[in-house]
Image (cartoon, rainbow over all chains, first blue to last red; front, top):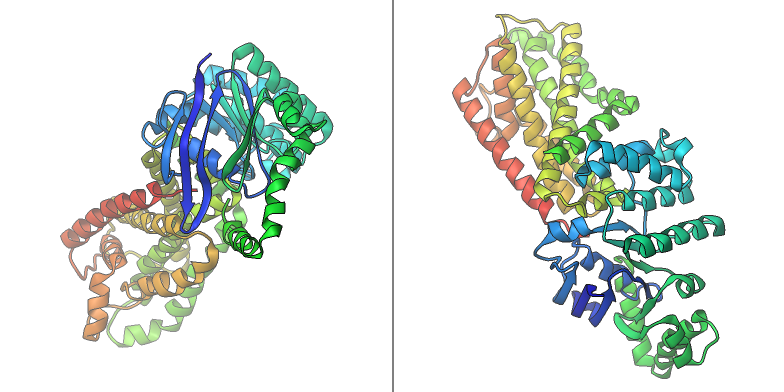
Length: 268
Length: 248
């Protein structure tokens, strides 16, 4: 199978601060790909560049065969996304939010109505679809956002910490649907998460990013083998924790890191 | 085209569903209408200006439109903070369609507020001296709405948060209102004020609206029409440009 996402030597600088530092990776079509890393590692910045809302400083990206800096429309049509923080209109109802999305993505009316009803039922919001989103809990909003991202039958699904704040039931429910979607319809899933057990269970491949650089790449089993760890969480800490120990070795390094953390804190 | 329609509709829905906002933003124009209109009426008449309520009302209508239109543009910051902006920016529609939908929606909301204030002015005693040219009045009201929705969009696109908001109110919106001829006539003004007035886009909107309603022009109908039309087109273009430059 081909590569649906190909990133080559990608860089994003914010002034002096380098958020993404010469990273390269590929995602095979139909795979579930976990993009892991501690807070501020550059995960969200990378997703923003893949999804056309942020221009890279340098490097090359291909998403579904198109360049996000040039063929924005083709790229945008090919993915659905659940952002790290909410992106619903609170003053509209759940149904209206879905409908607006469907119209923006050019989903024909009959298909729109059918898919909206199917998807809100799937995420367990069928009864609440006429209610204003401002009356929803954080978990309900998340579920609605997942449903919305799937509305236009995207080829790629970007999920930036999609299960944050969700109970285990909903998390399992959503992941099993996403796995099924990936298997049956060949949708490629690109996700970030801080739950390593989740990544271990669902991801075919993962990449670990830290301080803007990819420090490890491969199947979760390979990472565990390489680090001689029993689970992915330990492997993750072995991989990313290493950098912290190096920092401690050098006081100057540490100050530089802190400076970075401060300046990087405002934008993600 | 559908994207423009749905984003415009979204703003209308938000407007209609928020009665507090509708009533709240009537406060300021009513205050000015009552305080100035009735407070200065006797003085204005003694100075030979005629009926002050009649003179003032087009200015107050313009004021309501000005504030609502600029706010609608600044709403981009809200959408940025509450996340909805992202949803529109990753959609496969051009930024131009998104921003046109927003500006059109904002302009219709501002226009609706203008109409409400129009009715309030009639209740307060605004009377037509000659038979008014209502289509022309509506044209000017809508153009002012669009023009300042464009200006608001520029601010909303450039500002990252609400910190700069009082700055815009006090140093841009208020001066635009006060130096537009909305509350005083142009004759006998100091030279500096007259220049400010001539540089102010709202002056031509107010003058056109006043002319259409009470047949009293300071600059002349053709000047008003030309300036307002050209500026509106220009600001829609500038607003679109700044919006298209937004990165997340």
